[in-house]
Image (cartoon, rainbow, N blue to C red; front, side):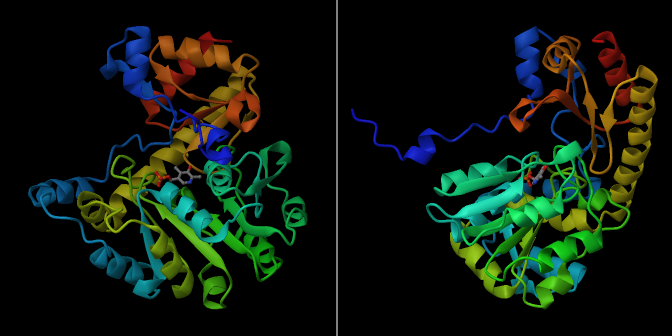
Length: 360
Ligand SMILES: *Cc1c(COP(=O)(O)O)cnc(C)c1O
């Protein structure tokens, strides 16, 4: 048979996820229960207990289709953000929303602009639509906003930005982001990925820009600080028109019932969020001190992870797995000498540090 698949599908790079615990257990003959995964920025405290309780309560309703409109969650978030219910769109994780945004705005040969060491899904979503990626260098693992702005051309449809950035963790302040958005031409969409925003003391707020009518799409997820990565739910808040377009791109039941009730309960779990933030701040200090003591170069600003430089990063990645600790190499991001480590509980961090030490 002749292979008639579209060129962009054939050439699409593969998104390498953090290595699942079961894979490492099989590959190295380990007991999965003893494996520590610090590779995908998952919450070390587990899931929000309030969310878990809500999920359990709704298990018996699984014979019904979910509410395709996410009515209750939409009302709840509208109150939470002081926005209108129809300013939201929901996705099977915010990953899916990134794809919807690209589907809505990127045609063949259109360009998108993003940081070279920023979330790889921006690249995948663009290529998938036949678009062209303009990937902007990030000197010293940070955004250079002038360079990013200079990369915007008449062909640019979307500028993607993550703050705090994944995988580097660099953080931009309110004024920096706002001034950058104001400098963009009015026919460009600014897609602002806030996957790690809740870990920040002072969160950037782009609602005033949305209210001014600018083309701003903010994305949030329940996968990180709420600890619900396995449920798959995220949302966009933007103006009503754009939210309407994103809604047209999705399939009718893209967010499942348990995800909706879990998210609804998680929003109220203020205690869990605060605890997650606290343990993250403490763990960051623990890693920073250990890296300094070991004489390792590191980058640590925001998010729930740290970056550490290792002259044999890939070998260390393998050796640590043999000891049951999974971290994340960054070869795909052009950072072959850096490991990204998700911040865990104190004893988990300590175990990771000990295993890292043995690789030096
Ligand atoms: C984890 C993450 C997301 C969220 O992904 P989900 O699909 O919601 O699990 C989005 N953007 C970035 C940069 C992330 O790191």
